Length: 292
Image (cartoon, rainbow, N blue to C red):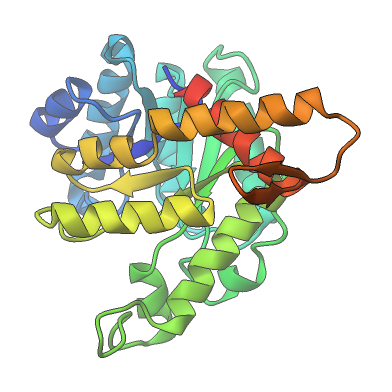
């Protein structure tokens, strides 16, 4: 099981068929969704289905997460009561606005872990941290909120609805500035909190070339994984966020060169001058290759 998932696949928690297919797939992390993909009337049954999947899906090799309903709803507590005993790897919480929400969820998890004889601190947290107007002002507050926090990700759909936008795209099809800003703030907030930055969904699961380009853009900027809405997206995401053999070889060369010249701040390689930021980038490539 990778500790830094490349692909995070959403699976409706009320569909045993889709859960079974996902458990047999290639995603590094599965997110059994109790929020947007499940109608209100189906949520009680979906909790039971998710708990059963957690109990019997441990051999899948993927991290098993559950996306609960927002903390300010009357559903989040029931979600946790139903699934904590089945010991998910983690809980994804939507519509967070600050590190205070993570601390609140951590306290709720601690109580449920104690009630279900689960070792306290076992269950991790990831947060969808850009879905309200207020959330954009809180992305610097996640550092130190809880040792459980493992990842931050972002989303534009709920944010555009919250802001009253008619579209999240410009006339040329590119994300509008507001949503690019949310994306960048999420990346910076995750890095500041020393957790994984996970890029958002690419909506058209039939557009493999578009997905690959979107993955490459995110990887260049610093994201180390990406959400998926369809199993067909998983192989593309996994490939994009796995360092190539050429990248690994170059990173090893950079690390070895600095190790051999510890007193130099800049070093020439293949006609280019490298400094300490290049060394840090190379070390991150090797870390991702080892974790993957």
